[in-house]
Amino acid sequence: MAQPEIATTARPRAIWRRTGGQVSLPEVHRTILVPDTASFWRKLMAFSGPGFLVAVGYMDPGNWATDLAGGARFGYALLSVIMISNLMAILLQHLCIKLGVATGRDLAQACRDHYPRPVVWFLWIICEIAIAACDLAEVVGSAIGLQLLFGIPLVWGCIITASDVLLVLYLQTKGFRYIEAIVITLITIIGGCLAAEIIFSRPSLTGILAGFVPGPRIVANQEMLYVSIGILGATVMPHNLYLHSSIVQTRKFEQTTSGRREAIKFATIDSTLALMFALFINAAILIVSAAVFHWSGHQEVAEIQDAYQLLSPLLGVGVASILFAVALLASGQNSTLTGTLAGQIVMEGFLNFRITPWLRRLITRLIAVVPAVLVISSFGEGKTTELLIASQVCLSMQLGFAVWPLMRFTNERVKMGEFANQLWIKILGWTTTGTIIVLNVKLLLDTFLPESVLKALYGFHGLPVPK
Image 1 (cartoon, rainbow, N blue to C red):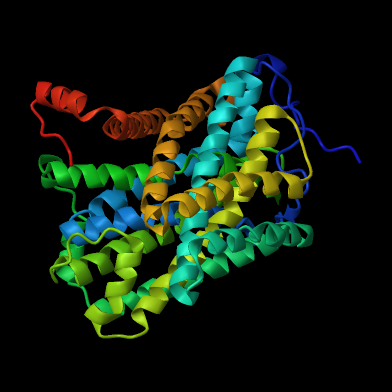
Image 2: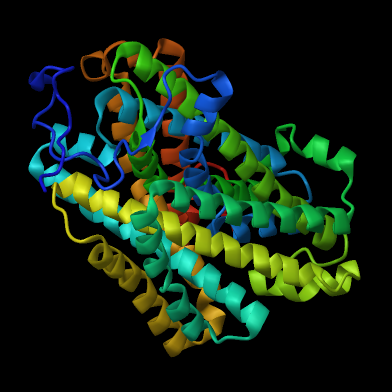
């Protein structure tokens, strides 16, 4: 059966280098009906779901290590950084919604239809590398959770985690709502486990409130600044931008100006609420780390395994470590579900090339599992932290190449019509884009430049070399 194509009657062809191909995720495109005459709350329920799939990327295992390190070393001080990162995420995901609703294209399709073919291939390759890197962190995170809970070796944990491909395939045949339901269920488990950890750790309410207030000490303290960059860099995931601009199109809303405006409004509410829940998750990890480790002489705790071993003894609650591991396993497994969807969206969007979903997800999972198994088998289980760090560096390399096109497309009135960004959104958006790119370039330089070059570079600017 022929696949539906992107409607192009609402916009002249001249604004795109190429005409639209098939719609994004054709098997679930516009399959969820939005009732025209329903109440505000019924419409909100109809649009609810995609935001939580996106929020998963903001609470994946790659974030856990940075949040744990920030809380253990600096107490509640970096809560403001998590909050700022979340506000950036809310803005960027709103722009993804606008792009998907106003143009009928996801971000990958928009790049394919706008840029020359060599640029499209370059963007696709680095995006595939970023998705594989993100998948690697999620697979390793799930494997660590399985090891902590059941004593399963990490290599076998990575292989077991790969079986989620079958779950995604099964749920997608049942309908997109089933995928959303299991993701929301896992998020609820994560939130419940971490809420219990907060109760057990009895943090200082005054300290928490003070931590959400940004202050100059974050910039003045080089070590604090460096951990802050890690938190910012690990928060915004490039694959989320492609994912959200696609799955927002699973809703069957009116293809009119008022219908699109209403879709943008409700989808933004859904996304914002979900990302505020992600803010709670990330803040909870840092708060528990600060309350348990910072004032107990364990300020160097940065690895997930160390936190697991110390939680129950320090809190005097036997179930604390178990809940921590359950939340980690749910986080990793949740992230792999959405990561496989993003992989399908990226390949189909950039290349206008479709392969069977099971083969696409098998390829994506093997790209993540094989490096993890090889590294763990060759160098031992102690290298999992290095694997997580390497995955975050790969994500940092691709992030600017996703945010820049997003800002460019949503700023252009010829592409977006009346949904083009207003001036204040343009200012906020380009400020966010510039901040993300600068911080990630710094992270890459600190990672790859030799120490002698770093000393010269930081010395020239009168700054100490970060440790």
